[in-house]
Image (cartoon, rainbow, N blue to C red; front, side, top):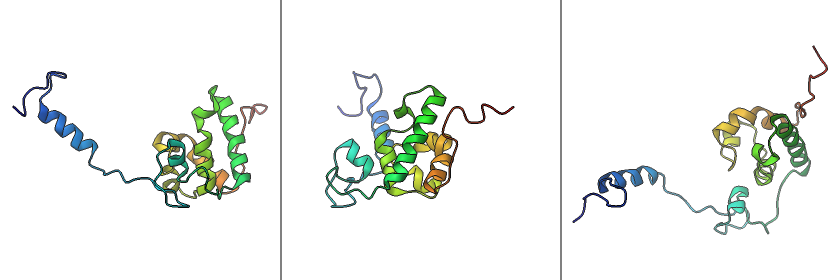
Length: 142
């Protein structure tokens, strides 16, 4: 009989169905390469929104500035660099060159928590501004 208690979880089948409906409310569209249109399955490619083989339109200088900034943030936080942002996320930022929080937060690997924590710096770097990059910033002033 359907609709009984699920022996594995002890929950009613109706609760499981409602839970899965909540998760499936937003239909997932396949992620396609923005260069050639191929459906992407690799997580790294999905983050970049392009195939690894497709040409990158990344701003190399911006990517370098983001890497330098990330190293300073990681040192200040006593965390590995990838805890600030992964290299793939920084590549995606350097390709998209976001100018608003809305454009930044939709990049895979950013999210609301990192937007709040690092968004202002990242947007400033994308705009060509200089931001404090190291733990020694302001250390000599009192």
